[in-house]
Length: 339
Picture 1 (cartoon, rainbow, N blue to C red):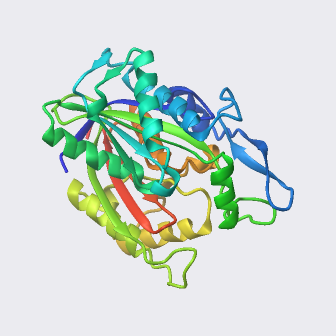
Picture 2: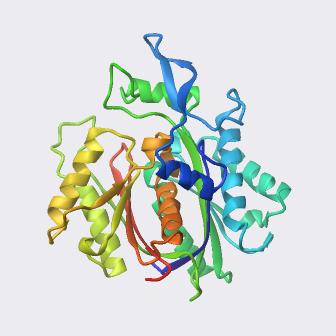
C-alpha cells in the first residue's frame, strides 16, 4: 500500500459535530447515553448514543448522510478547497446486509455535499461496504485509487447508525444489547469520520503507514476456541507494511464496544506479539463514550488518534484495531506528523 499522508480529519458524533470538541469530550470521559424510544422484548428501554439534533424518527440513511456530510465538511475545513472535481471520494458503509439502501445513501451524500459547496464528480465516488473493517478497507481502496487516478488526493468517509429499529432488532436477536440482564453487550451508537489523504510528500497531520486484514475463525456463534489468530495476522501484516514492531507502538485504539470477547483478543495480541516488557500499553476505547459505531468505528479511532497527535503527541505511533462479528479483522498503523 502506498503510504498515505493525512492532511485533513473530521468527526461528527453525539459528543460533537466536529473533531476538536468531540475529542475533548471523549478524552474527558463524557457520555451521552439515553433511552432512544425503543424497548426490548421484555419491555426494557434500550439505551443508545444518538446525535440529539437529528430527528429520532428519521430514516437510517438520512441520519448517516447527515453524519457523513458533517464529517467531510469538518475534514476539509482547514484545506481551503471546495471544488473536488476528479478527487476520489471513498464512502465506507455497513455490511452488505445492512447496506441495501447504499445507492440511495451515496446519491444523497453526493447531493448534500454539493449543497454545502463541496463539489465531487459522481463518477469518482466509490462505496465500500464491509461492516466493522470498513474503515481499514476504505483506506486501502483510497491507496489503490490514488495509484489509478490523476488526482493526488482522496477523501475517505465512513458512517453508520445502529439506533434504528432494524439494527436494534438484530442486536437483540444476537443477545448483544447491553442491559442489566446482559452486561456483556454493546450500547448502539452512531457516528461518521472522514480524512483527506494524499500520496504526495507534504507536511500533514500524520500518515497511514500500513493496513492489514485477516479472518478470525472463532466467533460468538461457534465453538471454535478463541486464539486471536485473525487479529494477530491482521496486525502483523500492518506492522510489516509499516516496517515496525508492536514494541514501537505507543497506543492501541480498538473499536470494541465493551464485549469481553474483544478484550480477550487484545490480551492475546499483546501476549503473542509484544517481545519486550512494558509497564503500560495504552488501550483507547472510543466506544466507552460513543457506543458501538459499527462501520464508522475504525476511522473514528483513527481520527481521534490523529487529533491526539496534533495536540502534542506528534511523534506517536498508533495501532487501530477493527473487528466484525462475522470474523473479519483489520488493522491500521498511523503515525504522527513528526515520525
